[in-house]
Image 1 (cartoon, rainbow, N blue to C red):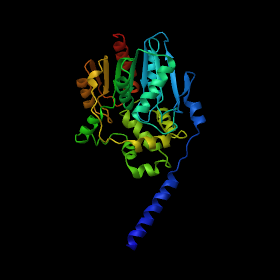
Image 2: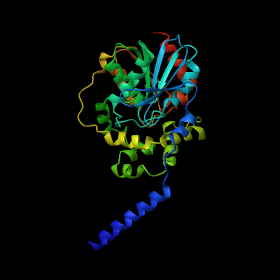
Image 3: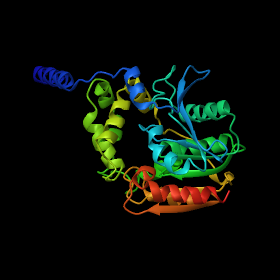
Image 4: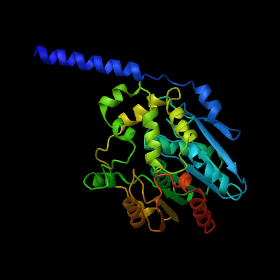
Length: 324
């Protein structure tokens, strides 16, 4: 018994030493905002107390295209499409609660419902109706959830390596789609309570770098500036607390069946064949579930086609939107 107690003390001491050696404090929000905001950045105060960062760019007379980023990302991921599509379309992007320059919000609500309402707050503020809605990864999940909640507002969907239905995730636990050694290590660690207990204090740089390389399939677009963007936004004042609250609050539990067949909007499904986070088999499920969908799969591309393959992916979106 005494040996076990001593071993416990030693392990605790080692953990404390590790935390001290790897400690990294937050970056001031003002410093990060000054670096990553631009002339198009606007901030919307909503009733919940959140301050949502959004941008309204491109052709103000064009068809509105609202784009939603994925987990641990930000609206910056859409900049390649803004540059390529903005001459024809009005492109609206936003940082979801807990992300980017929106950051931590009052009440720490980072649920799918909160994401849907953040999107709605921005489009209502801008007076936009009848728009195409697209999202990547978690933002793709927010896209189909928003379309279920407000079907009258969405004329088309674009699902880019999108999060699927909760029941699909349960099915994947039993399949070879999980346990991929190439996926971002941070997502695996954040699912562990012991890691969340120390994650607030340690420097996440190496995790950010590994996560970016894995998500982008080691694409040539991954450079120091891209890694710095993910890293610095992740340690913006309050964001680590928001991330930990979001991952701590996740519980698959029992969920009501969701019927995507009621979404009859034209839908473009876009997927990287080498996605290490959400496999292309999920794209097949979306294609079967949605009655008016078509699928494009990009060879040698990972989880972020709009940045990894900006020209071709933007061309596909342009061609799709012109059919509406």
